[in-house]
Length: 351
Image (cartoon, rainbow, N blue to C red; front, side):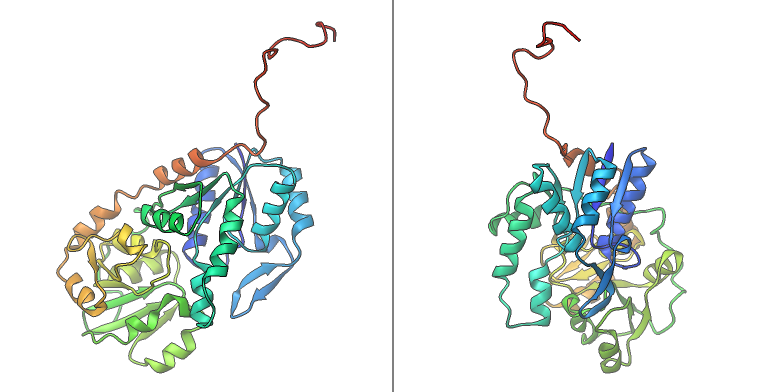
């Protein structure tokens, strides 16, 4: 199939959305599909305020139109609500083309984390409008579907995520230095991730923060006992994860949390708040603990066997995830309606 994937989140950004989409692109191509990824590096961009590593395309409508017309996709999936996503949405609606979207990020909460006086209502109204034009909106877990339905979203379908259990795997726990136990957070170091809730916990051993972002300098200065490693990728990332005794996920705004799946695949239990995202992945006493007392959850995780965590991750198949994505795609151009004369020449057989 010829599949156009439109996304404002792409390499060199490092986050769960980018990992999900780049893995999807690789897997689709390996199955023989033709994929056109329309992403920021193909355009003139400016840095996003407060997030210099995120580049936003400037006035991309004309170039998006030319790319889509040249590629002639059979299916169009718009993954993000940024400038490229909006341009692709305008292109599709102006031509009565069907498309799908996916809901990855709670932008209203992200804005509120930076500007607490902002209400989330207008942000969700804008997102309802954006996704309301899609034939289907793909959502990562049933709890989030229920929440979004309560906010007035429609046409929601489940697209479960997968994890690469060959890359993310248990390893020796001798990679990270410091007194044990080691409690680790991995992800963007930004206000909406609520990392300070982790850093202020009264826990024994050593705390690690793996990743980078606009809040890193401030947090590193305020919590000098914690060890900040910056961004890690590939085998180095796996070694960091696998060396931890507990993965602490303090976010209250993530729609799922791919990093939790990766930690569990490495045999590391997860401590998190009992909110949408973690509730879809964590089972108390089996692969982690959910508790409003995050320190208590983290300490309880130390009694969970790594093999139980690994076993829970083995059910999150990348192949199934890609199959679900393909099953939710819709034809960009609606098929012609059936008529009583279908199959009969309307010109008397003359050619």
